[in-house]
Amino acid sequence: MRSLLWGQQGNVQPFSDEDASIETLSHCSSLSERTSAAEEAGETEEMAQEDFQYKLKVYIDSTVDKSAKTRQVALDGLKTAMATKILYEFISERRMTITDSIERCLKKGKGVEQCAAASLACLLCIQLGSGIESEEVFKTLKPVFKTILNDGAANTQARQACATSLGLCTLVAEDDIMDVYATMESFESLFTHLYVREDGSRPSVNPQTTQLHTNALLSWALLLTICTGSHIRVIAQKHLSKLPHLLENDDVTMRIAAGETIALLFELIRDVDPEFDYDGWEPLCEKLNALATDCNKHRAKTDKRKQRSVFRDVLKAVEEGDFQSETIRFGTERMVIDSWVRKRTYDAFREFVGSGMNYHLQANEFIRDVFELGPPMLIDSAALKAMKSSRLERHLYNAAAFKARTKARNKFRDKRVDVGEF
Image (cartoon, rainbow, N blue to C red):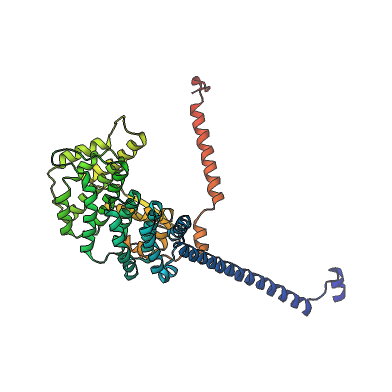
């Protein structure tokens, strides 16, 4: 009977030890392949990291090359790397070498090279964070920045770059508040040239010099954010009646910088003294309102549009103490820009790291500390991928939404529809 049953089922043979061995080997082979693939991926990543570090070393060596073009390429390469990656360990070991190269380029280079070196100095301080290492870097570079900034015969573009870089480096790396005040006085000596003179006349300067004064004003405003309450009172008494004169400047960038600085100063002085009363409040509000509704035909449309948007917010800040908050999203986190202090700080960092700002907000401990975001969040790539929709999914969704919008609009725009049918 048993033999008959086996015959009816097509001569099925029992499972042998040989079959078991083959299956076991198959599983082991599959596991071995997966392990091998993981090891290869790890090795590939390690090789890519080594190649990247090798390129950085070549860039560092090339910053002292005899060719100005080679030095420029090297500076730009280091800037891009520092703006888009966290390189603390690599840079920390070589910080003084990089600092010496920056100093050399600032002293012996020409305009564009000096600008690149000044920007690299800021990125170096951002990478190192606030501490002894960045203080060492800044101690070397601060005298060079100030020398170029105060030298009327120096290249104007280099002076503009030094004005911006000196402000941010001071914020990050200066350890003495009295030195901060001294640097602010250096900035004041520049932008106060645009104040109306005692005889009522206005100084006439070229556009490049106006940009230098604008950069100095913005750096001065950045350092305002870390001043003590008593110093804010002194600043308000000294400058609040004169800053509105800058709102009449012909340059839209200067007008906007002046407006935002006034809003920032009002925010700071009201934090120190909630009952603060400004004598020129009504004329100032009238001037801000005029800029918020400017219809001057002699100004470019884009300038007027940008100016109106900014000055509507500035007017609210002065009149009501209000701020138009903005939410910045990065990875799975978000940060709210809810004050003029935070806006000025965010804009200053973003000017140097550019499109890498979101990455630095996620991973740079120093920047996260500045914006009170806490330690960096650790999210593995699989979880992050699961949270995000694929590019194809986004494309399909946007295409479908666009198609639906187009159909809806065409329905209402089609002039061939018989009105009687409705």
